[in-house]
Image (cartoon, rainbow, N blue to C red; front, side, top):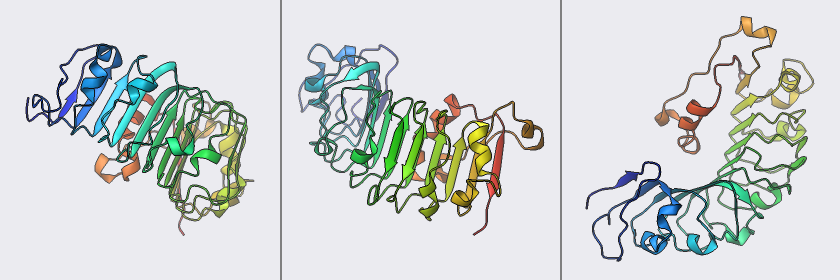
Length: 302
């Protein structure tokens, strides 16, 4: 066990954590995945901090309050926390200088303040947050953020605004399952955006006008109702906003009559062929997303 680097725990399994910092039983451990926080109730959080080589940690369960999360190893580079539909309270990650990837699945009492995020955060995923305040004025100020995923009612407000000067390093933006959002406005910012994904935001009526000014965009991936998609067809009302994008993928519903005239399915690329910000997410895409509903692919030459 002294050479063990990566440990994936079965549901509700119990494991031995080192009780002293010089315990060599699992001292080389770098990845600890799917650990139920209920198994940490009795001093387990203190023992978790003794994993001084731990880089990637995935926790799920209800037992993870502010005090418990403050005992995580400061060497972490990737942290995934899943409370389901329970609420996170008092999240502070500012002391985790090496933390580059953070995923929070569960309701948020409020968004952390800008100084409470990890200072070097590059990838942020939020799901089930259930907050009505527009997250963009806060998140667009994160100086190192390169990938942002807002999933499954992480935002339940009506309007989202990306403003001038924001998201200076963002390369990948994914908006999935924001079912209450009616309007999305881009007034500037995102000078490095390469990939934009908009899926299942069922009340959103159109692509933002400001998308026309994001000339770095290479891939636009849309899975929306026909009324949304049809606005982006050649010479339609929204075509001028997206015609500069080299690769456009639109997924349509099974009831669309065009389905008989187009190829079905989207091929899933290999992990090594993906940009860094998609490699963790591709397995989730394969398992959870209905990619075989029929697709329109547009390749546009510059």
